[in-house]
Length: 248
Image (cartoon, rainbow, N blue to C red; front, side):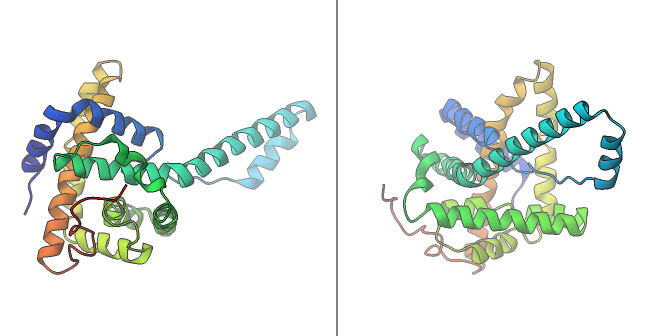
């Protein structure tokens, strides 16, 4: 069993040694949209949009259409960057926080999965995870939220073994978080007070809380991983834990 206090105490101990490197990685995760809970869905009413355009002068309609296309293009580019660069940096960032919890503070872990033999497996698995989350959310909001917690460990699992396969990574994340989702939700809620304090400093203080949360979640993964191994849900070999070091 794990407690919030235990995870946070460990995270604070790590932060005392490596805070500024952790801060850099947290900022990268923020910029590429790789922080847990990011995302959303949107919809539109095509008929109402047509009606609104019809009552506007032709010039105004043209400029509205132009800016809609521009905004849509920007969103598309950002989405492409998120998939082909952001996903890989996210997994690398999670690897950094797991390793720094084990006293291995190497910023190079951020780009670790751009290497041949790792890149496409990471992108494919993370993309499939996102597709599943969108489909669950379209079905109903609550199942989508539940599944977002069920799939929470996928980036960490990929950080251990990028070749584990999409189906197995999602399955193992489900297994790791079984019976733990509510506790993980409460753990995340426990950071709200820190973020509110960060808002008092013109919002900048929020940025300095992020390494604390990321470090705590890495501690959570380490606990869930150990528990999964103990009950036979996975093995050290499957997660590459038998290796002494990575090959760079």
